Length: 187
Image 1 (cartoon, one colour):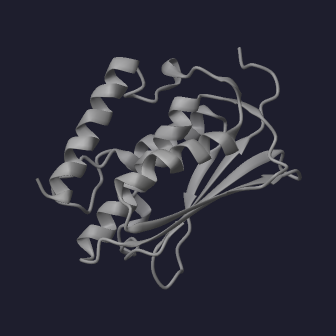
Image 2 (spheres, rainbow, N blue to C red):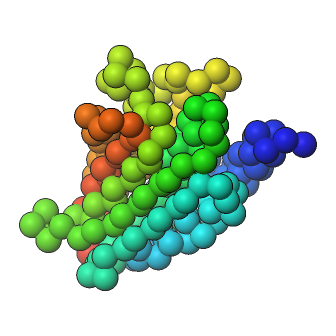
């Protein structure tokens, strides 16, 4: 079995696991917030993802002053998995299969928000597609469902935040995810 087929199997297994756990659809109704350490969730996701594509250099950096917030850990990690899957697929389609992914989590006290910056050095998103990347079902990849970035937007919105794609780089992608700190459990 080739690496590409193995990744498809892993992806299908993840989706099945999500269905069993009830996290396959990150809708607001399925949102289960608990007091969470976003930095720890990021580190756990990176530790899970790195062995899946060892040829990709994955850097996860967390600011030491990151506060805890009420969040749904499964949804936050699913958002990171979706971004990672998009990057690894783009690296493979570019023909080299390797690349670099940086995920940084910082505290923005002026905005009372945690900001996760996700960047890769892959081929990037075509300029004519950038305005549609968060639309459900939109994809530039053959055989893809086009739901990964739409799910990321739903997850960010469930947490009272947002996700934006920043263009203008020579190559690669840069997403900025804003998660406001929620100190009291949402009702």
